Image 1 (cartoon, rainbow, N blue to C red):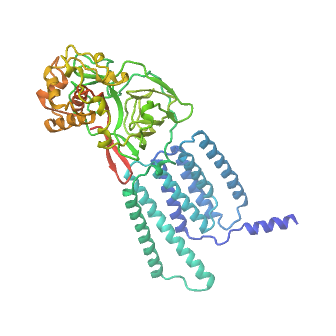
Image 2: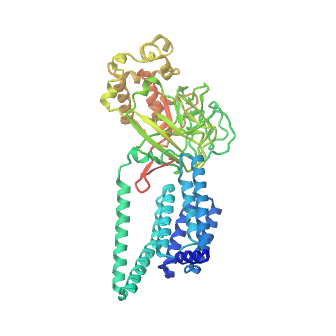
Image 3: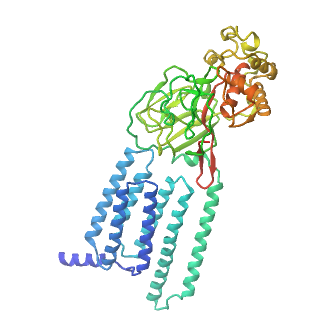
Length: 552
């Protein structure tokens, strides 16, 4: 009796509708290999795992062809057991890396492909492998930062479309064989393949157009943002700003101008040297996925000494995060003003200083480190940002129109200017004018002794009876109207003032000169101001949905 039961079980396990098409098997195998190659190109899984997978899948397809008419009960049981092991590994990795489960999911589907390749007797088994390869391709695409990944998609389609055609031909042939009818003619099969190819081409073109022009709503990022990479090993070097492009940068500005490295921006350091002259090369810095365009803020400099801007000397707060994300504190008065949320993910393409770039004002930060340094001038990492680093941020911004901005502080500021404009510049003291701003903002009004013609110019262009917004706009319009942007700027004379040199001698300059002149004139207008360095939004790529940020 047991022998008879075992015999019946073997009979039931013998596969029916065995797929005899070698071409179909070869096309599906090629589709699977292309999807695994896509994972390898995006560095989602270890190269040794990829190589082992390709070898095992190839062996599995050969084994399946050889055993396609046999029950393979031991093989099926082994596959089931090992699939449970792969699932357990996926759950464990997801628990250890809860912020981004794509890599564990890719490994799970990879091992499912390997195990399933040893039992592919029927057409539907091959189609399951084809669908799984599409999922692997989609996972690889989620890591892609370049439109060049489209070539991998086209290569996969070049293998997948023939697979679908061959599967349909095999299905129709089996129907005709069972019914005793004739096999479908070549013309009919050609027509079906043409229709299928046209349909897939239409889907591909429509998908590209929709993906390129559909708005990026914040809700579409909630599930994929944020995610955290594994935490790198690093040696802590304190909270000082370190720029790999300027490894010997002193803490204080030297007597001579800084020599510009064309492959690194000089504005990420303990000071911003306004005497520096040079041009930057068009070097890719990072790619940013963001729900809105923004300025990727780095450092805010508050002290102007006539030829450079300095960071505050105080020690920043040290923030710890046993679990992601970091909660970045915001001033109480600003907490209720946020009107929109900006979600960002940064993909570093070149080594950067230990400055964490975000849109203003960051509230949540997902960053692969146990601690960070944070103060009013920015966020600093305990290690430099290396190529390949990925981190995410959530910023709460204030979206205000000119009307709302114009109403801020008008009653307080009307008729009152900086002490330099109210009295002799050499005798002016901010402490004598407590009505200007709150005590915590007085540092943003401090100025060194300025040339008299700078003060006189401020008296001429700043409307005394206007509020802060009107004063800022008046200064902005004046600079845009009277001065030219240029990278060809003569050096600052020894002992000269950078603002005076820009406003009266050269009458041209680049970003740092315009920003400095604007900040100094705003301070003279009684408006607290700082100079912020960072990166512009970058060029938007509609195919990838990323902002491509470059050095120049």
